[in-house]
Image 1 (cartoon, rainbow, N blue to C red):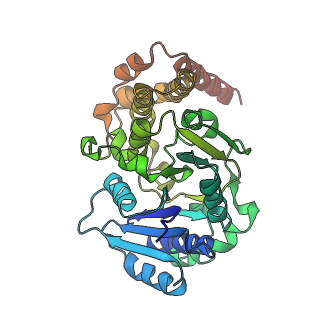
Image 2 (image 1 turned 90 degrees about the horizontal axis):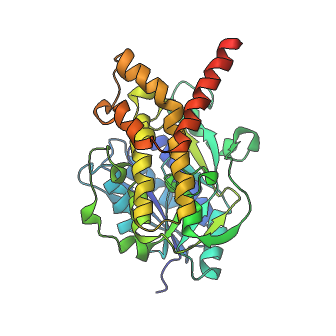
Length: 355
């Protein structure tokens, strides 16, 4: 049997109503490509009845090869990323969130690239956004998302992601450039990767540090850094997926304050570690400098607020033991991007007070 070109991999934990729409959108995109594509779902021992939803949708799209797996225990987000890829058999894998929605032409475009660009190891994707937490004021979540397909088909409800729109082929290193606004490929749905390279990485060395490490938050970037630097890649500029915003438990958009979320850890620590790991594994020097300045600018822009919150107000900051301002300052003391972000914050505050 000819191997599949593409595996669409969906790790899921709860959020059943959103998952239903995500899975159905993936199925619609796969119609006509059942010989080339499969859909793989890894359920991280959800409380929601994910399996029943999967079975209902599978019964509607019997021609599509679909795989469902449920972990006996919740193994954590990062391990579930690895598990869903382990279950896949395609030449390339595309991990999407259960709150992401594949566009109808995505599978057609991706399979064409995979078949014509034989030497590439990676496809970097542009995407647009749908703010799920702003869709109507329905009384319950099922009503809220019932007509989500209508929103996806009406451009006025989608927010264009500010990244280049031209297609081109280049080294993988280019795809990490801050201009693509993909969190240095941390936005997992923005990458389609060759499975053999992914499989070549020794996963036993991964640090599963309870959502406090690069690998536990961005396990795919850990693998990219080791296996993909210097390989050939392709950038597809027109959005092939709509990212659902406003449902992630660790983000501020779900009602958490910034300091009660995991975002400070990501901004001040994880992104720095990510860029350094890319560098250790041979990231192009120019790309490294761009990325380092960009990370420094993020930290600089947030540096005064963290001093105020951490030291002066003694606020409850999640992972505060890892976010000492002095360590942050020493990390970026020679980084011009840090001072750019710092002055940017000060200027914005001055402008705000003059209003």
